[in-house]
View 1 (tube, helix red, strand yellow):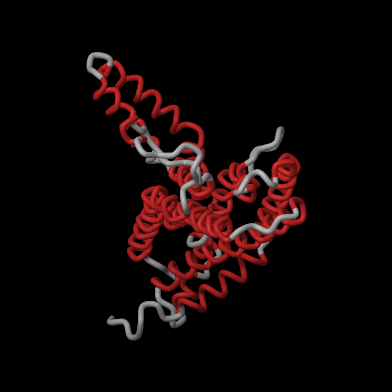
View 2 (cartoon, helix red, strand yellow):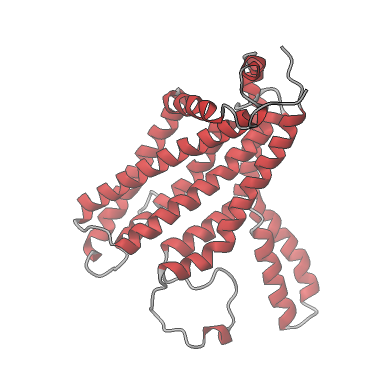
Length: 318
């Protein structure tokens, strides 16, 4: 039977409903509380160590995000750990939860198409994560102003906003993966465990796999010259960048550290003309981080597209 109307009919109804459910759910309140406590603790500790260098550092607010104080790591390090958990929590039962509650057939009986259901759930998850990140960033900025007594400059605010976009894209990767497993498996516990397993693999074991592969490749490189050694380094970097964690860390490094000029091996000839101690402007840092940021967005699109195809092929029974 031919469908009438737009395939996105009912999209915003799904978005608003899911967005309200996320903001009022106990799951998100626990995660938001955990993120809030961690953010305040890390920023407060970093501000304590930075108060003596307020007048010396032109990017004091960026250091507020990247400075660690024993025993606490930096704010960015905590975000790299907690944002994937937030993305997974938002989507691991997005689809199979509807099946288990026997509400999917009722939902699709309304003037709402499958396209709008899946897209609406994903957009609502992104909006929830964006709201959390924006509120957290404003809180960190306000706490920094109170503790340091200095208002951040426009260039620092710009880098902070792009940092939020990169963090949102990073969380979107894990949310899209969780939604893919939610479409694939009918049990929410299975989809949650599968997504957590993939996250742990990239967070803990992927660098070990890269080192093992590099050791095998080094046996061949030892027979060659300098060109082979450079090729080995490039292969290691390529394998490492297959992990979303590496892509995110390199993006954040380029955005929050203006003195970073390269994210890979640099030859001496490439440093000719560079003035030591100079900071890159924002647009050059964006150019430096653009490949990694684009790769994160591409991963989100590919994972969501695959979940969309699987969801369109599933049979919905009353």
